[in-house]
Amino acid sequence: MTSKERFRELFLSQVTRPGAGMLMDWLETTDFFEAPASTKHHGAYPGGLVNHSLMVYDYLIINPHAAGYGMETRTVCALLHDVCKANYYVKDGTRYSVKDSLPMGHGEKSVYLVMKHMDLTDEEALAIRWHMGAYDDAFKGGSCALGAAQDKCPLVLALHHADMLATQEEKRRTPAGGLL
Image (cartoon, rainbow, N blue to C red; front, side, top):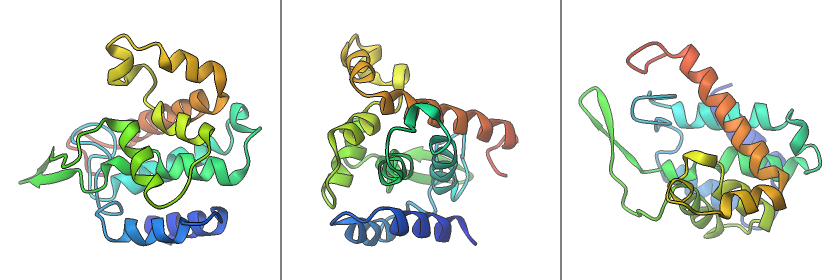
């Protein structure tokens, strides 16, 4: 089974709310399944974004801090946290660079793009919005909202933790140059 097939199967079998099919149809019109996860760090190869999303899913479903949330919520957060990276990278020779046609921020953009097709719960929106944790530009700029979101919703830290575990695992697996 390819990564795209696994993503599609997990998403469509576990996300049953209105708009899920429309969101999947929209993803199919983007480069989400062929895009890298980053320009030079984790998953910097074609298909790295979908592979990263699946690895975040694998870590989030076993995270004890996410145990109080249903599989649909964990699936939505893990598989869609980086939707903002669809149609975000362009290939320059052998490297990728960023070409952001909707520069509204990382987590914010993912929430926005998902909610164009399907509703999110408040907790899902918070987790996706703040999945970058202390690496988020708003936090680095002095915003106190990350701490408030983590206090309000354990899923925020659980998704961030799953994202960091996946990122570190990918960096260990990926040789210099980004290709597996």
